[in-house]
Length: 349
Image 1: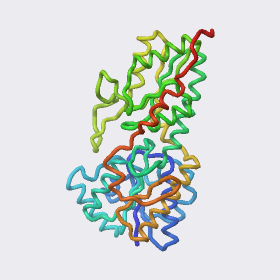
Image 2 (image 1 turned 60 degrees about the vertical axis):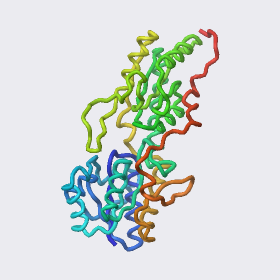
Image 3 (image 1 turned 90 degrees about the horizontal axis):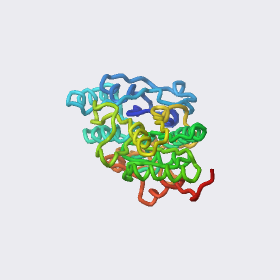
Image 4 (image 1 turned 60 degrees about the horizontal axis):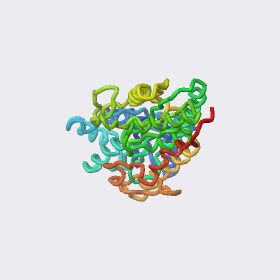
């Protein structure tokens, strides 16, 4: 049995824990493991290397992915699909384990329909994949973003400013909501809830009146101002999956808050720091458990499945239950976006 491992899309903490677990479990079962370099780009270009136990020793604690990654789409053309299928035959790959988000796993599902044996492992710091409670990398990103927000409290309070913190999240606000709660953001804005800038300004004014002369606003990059109706983007250029690069909502919101309230307002964009660095304990352990399960699914002949977390258990679900949809923050959690906005009335100096 020859198993190939691939990571695609954005990097995140915990990927190397998955890789080490797969190679280790495969070794125990007598399987051979290969690594596909740079995601689907490597599968198209034939960049595949052997992976031995010595290659993955103690990488569980290292951020990023030793295999590299890319946002290349193997279905960009029939020519690229043909190259992928040819390289799978050329390297004698019996099963391809694909670790990625919606785009990466969506392409994997298409490959499975072309006859490629696939096992999926969902990962995304946005935590917006269906079929799993939490994705690898999410809770580490929450901790990083929350720590940044907590640090911004002191500078905002010292200068009596409003600081708008932009956090990743295109279609779902899981990361912004959880990081905002853990970091004590006074206003949390997520794609699942319409943005009313005047409501945000009212909170800032009420805080000012009560003597709280600073405010922290956490906003997901995918929030759309009601009067603009579309994503705020850094560039209109699209990647091979058709996505534009988001960014800039914090700048627009900061300018509008300053105009309406007169408060000095600054924007902070956390950017790629959210997905960098070593995984926390949760993501290390989750990565190890998912990697082991992925190999066990191969052993049991459960091809076309994804290894996911449900409650406290790692289980298998069909790959098509993970992709082709967005796991949004449910209605019952939306009230948490205003948890820290409540203040007592009156002047207190």
